[in-house]
Image 1: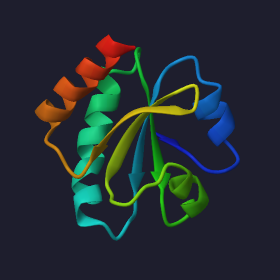
Image 2: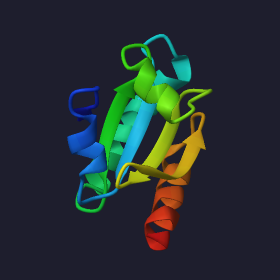
Image 3: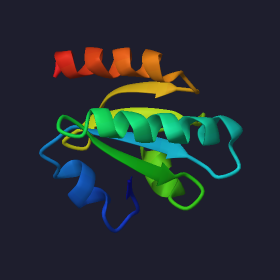
Length: 107
């Protein structure tokens, strides 16, 4: 799993050939902990179409504030570093999979 920080954000997100789904999370967040395994399973399923990455909001608060993160977990789909859409709060795998497929069809 790719972990984003201020050093690799530009290369991994802004300069990515693939859209990037970023999981904004924190270690103390219960719903974030529930989202982790779901996010990893979806990363396997969509690995050819989307880059999956995690960003710890406690460690990278400036990057999180750049996306106006007000609640976590928050998944943001970005293309060329720009937000396409976001999903806030925990969602089950099946629901997230449908949403991701819908977003991919829009790109």
